[in-house]
Amino acid sequence: MPKNVTIFTTNTCGYCQMVKKYLSAKGVGYQEVNLDEHPDRQAEALALSGAMTVPVTVVTKNDDSQEVIVGYNLAKLAPAVA
Amino acid sequence: MSDSILVYGADWCGDCHRTRALFDQYNVAYTYVNIDEDAAAKAKMLELVDGRNTLPTVVFTDGSIMQEPSNDELLIKLNLRPAADETATPVVPEHDIIIVGAGPAALTAAIYTTREDIETLLFERGVVGGLAAVTDKIDNYPGFPDGVAGLTLADDLRKQAERFGAVIELGEVTGLKTQGDKTLVSSTSGDMLARAVLLAVGSDYKKIGVPGELEYYARGVHYCATCDGAFYRDKKIVVVGGGNSAVQEAIFLTRFTTHIDLLVRSKMRASDVLQKDLQKFVDDGKITIHLNTTTDEIVGENNSVNKVVITEDGTKKDLAVDGVFVFVGLEPNSQFLKDTPVELDEIGFIKSDDRMMTSMPGVFVAGDIRAGATMQIASAAGEGATAALKMREYLEGQPHPIQN
Image (tube, rainbow over the protein chains, first blue to last red):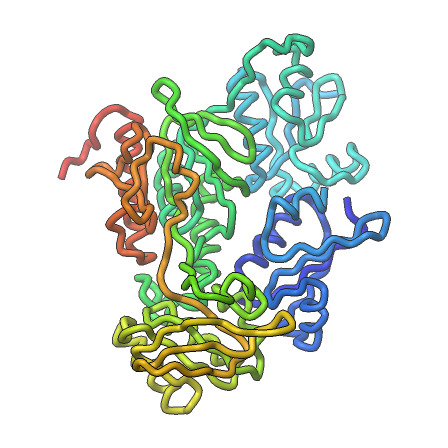
């Protein structure tokens, strides 16, 4: 189980819902940064992911290493939060 | 200690479903505890496993506990397979119906099959609700006089299917093979057998295939307005396409952007109603329509787009923009069927007979992916219902009692 998971989302993004749904199903807690509510944090999401898209999921592991997953990508998300 | 095996699970949990199907197959008695419906049981489970909130959690009669066990581990635990015997054939879980996809066609089919108590498992590799879920607003689906948000429609369809017991597994189907009178479905969750399969894998937005498109993917080139539009607050963009999606999404994007150039290869193909809506934004100076205009190249530097090269009425010109959103039609998600007997048309859509069955026995098709489909959510739902009834006929081996 990772130390911390932060997801950058928007109100209208279906793939963001899927990431949240997957994490809830696996019992992984997360913090959500909704960019519609916090447009000032958009640059942060862009810097982390290098992409102008959401969802961006930042997984902080127990050794404090970080993995950034762009989009709804189960092949990367599943092992990152296992 | 308990006199029955307890399976703590939830209806949305694919592994729970797999575990229960395995127990059913081997006639192993168990009690299913849905932790979503029983908070006390959930608390009890968490106490048993030191807070490791993973499903399914299986508590055996000897008090031992397994979390998220594989079928192999379960069979060994229950002495149903000798651990050392590697020659034993692995047990393949079996389902009545496996639906590949979970868009409107798939979910409607699942509502019909599960309501008739035909056990149904759906696979979704992307968004539950499919392209409908990432569409901002749907104005032509019947029953919603004011239109409906794509996400809302998708979520309601999912709830309706799950209410009758449909199970959605988040994973991908990678191949199909006929095995006796069943179909062996290979997936990211392992192999499984289905008495009937419904291919409702839908379509995805097509690419335009110009230089810069791949290079700047998600860094200025986008195919999902509802996902990526927010990055274009107070920016200038182009939308490529002249159909319903292009117009609908361009209108959605005006809430963020300062100006949109709509690049239409030939003439507008969007419905009259949408074109009327669009005209309001044209009159306000928020959208400019360019007809007879091809998008030739997407140019940028430092990882972001700064212009597109277009040819308008035969004249080449540059448009300074921050981003490009592409909605130029749909392409079929049928790549995984290439090595199967399922016959595709020249574009990649799936051919079917009048029972909606493909060239592979017991494998049906519905929705956008079916050759001849009209690419509408309402039609996809209708095709899903039809396919469900045809699959029931197939499973019963007899025609529907109400003849037309």
